[in-house]
Length: 344
Image 1 (cartoon, rainbow, N blue to C red):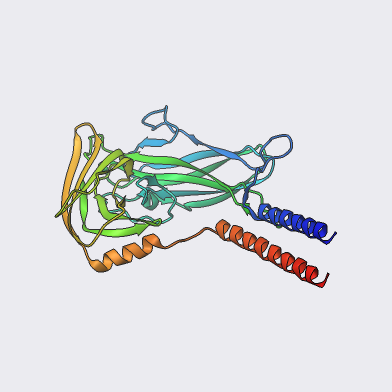
Image 2 (tube, one colour; image 1 turned 90 degrees about the vertical axis):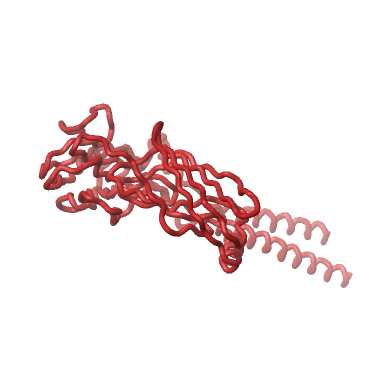
């Protein structure tokens, strides 16, 4: 009889622990009503003005004249069944560490720019908050004034619109979802073509990023033109043997920006190396760079420690705690059972 009670208690404990595991697992809120209509969802649409260079584009690509003043209009529509707060920002373009053009930073310093940044041309607030009723639309306006003189290339920025669409629950761990849209803003003045030209920063060094070891160097774009679909071919030659060839595809760079390039390499021991870098963006344009660099023993040790460090996510710790709890409870019940058996 006691054996049956022990087994029953064990089943109850394991079932309870499994329930707790499910309870603490992060869940993505479906955020929908019973009629499958999303509670919070929205869209944005740029109102294309008369000076748009190509009416087929869904972002602003504008031909401007010196000191021209213009208001950009964007229609934000709440598609959901609840009121929605939307944050809008008009920012400069920059090159992120991942090698894409981004617009989410409120302050971006341009690299060797001969023309003003878009943020310097905006008149009034660059950040706006609006609340939209369900199934309604609102028009948001940003006003800018073009530079005093004509300029080469482009001035590039973007309008980001974001809103929280996830449900928050007190009794359950829920991931907070956000929807973000980016609408590019391109200002043009002179019509002649600006050719890309990159330079390589002075420092080439070993680095650890996202628990990966690799090589870091800086590419600099001082030209007022963006680069897209870039292909980087990276080759390292030490004294003894060639390292594996690395290739990065579909990379981007914003005008007048820098990019901290990271190339994964598993083993970068102390020694002297030569970096061979080839960059291509389109047929007929490419650049080659060669740079000698040294990795010290101290840098090698630091890189090894950073790469091997384990940074487990919170979910892993929760599961470990639950499993440990199961083991302790089973051990305790087993001890109680054995103690009871001794007295019989």
